[in-house]
Length: 299
Image (cartoon, rainbow, N blue to C red; front, side, top):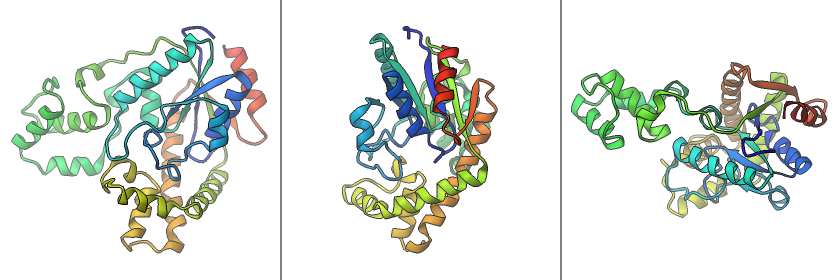
């Protein structure tokens, strides 16, 4: 490994086993893991964010995890800055950096640089913004970025600008062209038949409820984390909040969570499969030997 990598990037749908694979690669290659997950950055909330288990964290060093107060927000620009610093530090110590990818935008921004087209639409936010009058919309945009570089008389462009800024942070101008990182990435994708992915999702959803998801969510609320906090809007916590409000019976909670995760897994698969840089491996049989061989050849 050199100061320019390569950096191993593990991607794939939720519940496919990315965390275990990243851990196994780190153990085999004496590496460190940089987590690329928009929810795992938050402290204390561990169950629905699928943070690595304690035994993994004792054996391997993890970065970009458990450092943001759950009452606050954290955007992609902040993530990329922190993750790049972590990768630079890892490579400077002649260690192997492994990016464990969950959040599509975070991985894309980290490995390829920011892009306006990389931020997906947010239908709910758009509805809110489109109801605003022109002056209110302009004020919200300028509060996020005083110099956004868009036509302040065009509501369509302002809505899109706010949508992007809410996710990626200011300034907006930097997103008009990608600036790739100084290191080279080796993209590893994990996949399986949809029936297998769905079964894994259902199993994990049941286990999360059994591990105390409701109690963890209630503890966060009791500690003052608002229901609108980004971490509580993610899959798992959003459904747990619905149960707490009396909208979802406990017996149905795992199925409701699994349905949300199935939709998310399919979005992830569509996103990653469009990227020709990803080399795909089936999870059965154990792909680790073939992946290590591929990494050695690609490196």
